[in-house]
Amino acid sequence: MSMYDEIEIEDMTYDATLQIYHYPCPCGDRFEIGIDDLRDGEDVADDLPKPEGEADAQPVAVAA
Image (tube, rainbow, N blue to C red):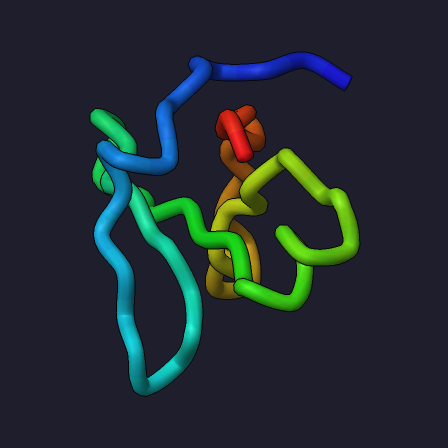
């Protein structure tokens, strides 16, 4: 799996309603990772789903 960048969790924005951390990608996309994923040991944030016909962006590694 290739990574775009490593981001510290402190640099991400937390959305308490959705219980996710998110971070803007320079390409205009947004990467997110949920609290439950972090608790399960996941440390890679996935890009949001793209509309049909658009290429997927690369995931971002985050320090948990």
